[in-house]
Length: 218
Image (cartoon, rainbow, N blue to C red; front, side):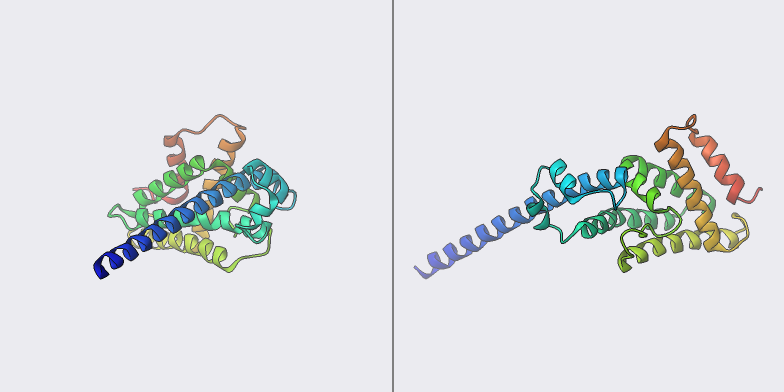
């Protein structure tokens, strides 16, 4: 009898855990749905002109329901960057820890960043709105975690330039300034693609531009 009771208790606990896990999964999906919509609205209108009501309506939630997931519009905006940063930084580290020489890592990093913003075009527009070579936090006020994520990305790129300078592959100059210049070229390429203002630059042409800017000729 005791064994049956214990087994029944374990089964109840397992059912509770399963229901709790399903609730968390549904909650995570709902949050992602709201963030996907908010990313589009912020990218199109900017932070100040975007409204929580429009985000809620497009995500097919009431404003009250949105508040059950996020404290404010500022909170949604920051979580967009937190979510994408969680994808962005680990991949940067993977590329920059490979066995490839610095000059090749530079090209692979550029290709991956361009590909990331192609995959998430609304986020790309949002980053460009906030300033691509400075923390995109002018609106709303700066969030320490987002500032740190931005600084980490720039330090990773600066470390790449330092390694490339030691091997004689990458041009001389302050590594952090070169890292900002690299981000600026990525942003310029991204802007041309998003605005469709010019004939698209081919991958080989883009690589040639990066090599002219940063790689020491043999």
